Image (cartoon, rainbow, N blue to C red; front, side, top):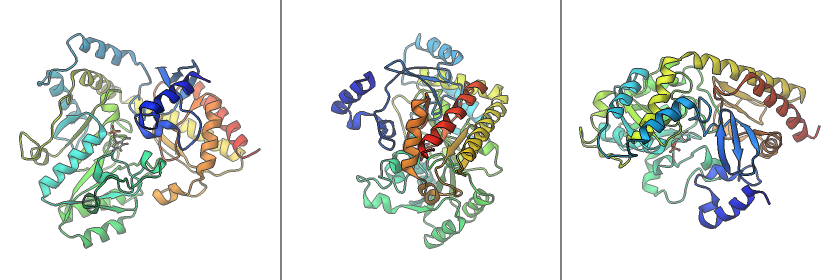
Length: 429
Ligand code: PMP
């Protein structure tokens, strides 16, 4: 028995399913999850001392690769002065100023401890501000595990087969309306049928949680126009895309600007951090400036702020990072496509910058239905074949992969070589 297998046995006795977040259990791909003891640059090292090139990067945060020295130094400097005060600090002000200077639509921002908290709070503010109760989300988008979002949810929820979770009351579920992604007409119909009742439309402007799906031209523009006409707040959940697709998030690439934005992942440099922000008059509804309550014992934690500030400062000062990530992403994409061709398959690859998904599906993937049409058992076999060759992918078809600046050209060549043989193996060639 490997050490990972032993640890998983022990874990299952004391932690539900043996993990603290469902996708980690490898349920969708079979086999035993690897227990990771360390990571360095582009590599994960498991408890049995196997080393893997990895394309998860903690589900996004580690855009500069693991154990980045600059962030390590910021954290070790900060820990000298205790871990938490529960009182305001200079770093929180600097962090807020930095975010506001980087993300154009954010005029005020509140720090929280996870992406889930960010989206839960943003929806509460949207409801408080508009005095309306319903919201629209998109099938296959994932906004964390807040009750209102576990309706047709993507990511681990669909991987585990529970996109509509037990435990969410009918009342809450009734206030969440869902539409297919990229289908403006459906949204217009929902808004018409619920006139004056929709507080917010929330979406991942580029979806990572049904696998990577891009907005079609006109979709975001159409949502913006509809929101303006109907007094609805548009919320971009940029927990994944924030500081990943540009130093100002996806909203730095598109002309469409949201009213509220949620952030997480990269903003904490690997520490548990989230944030929500937006127009001043909306954010001033948040307590203690306004009546909408939201709080946190560890919010704005000094160690987390130190890590996040070091990360954002670096990205702000080195925008060429994004050009380089796109170059390496394109190289990987081209290599994977060539491998698919050699195997006689025209599998869809959706990519933007350093995010991509290879779907085991030869049709275009533009929404949840087309994502779900992928061959999941083939994905599982491919995942295992790649792992065997030292490449650690996300253990579900319904996830985006994330490239870090630590991924070199040589490593990309290794991934492409592993892809070619793995694919042939899976297809029985
Ligand atoms: N929103 C999006 C777009 C996400 O991808 C995630 C997590 N993958 C969340 C919200 C929830 O963030 P967290 O897991 O930090 O609660």
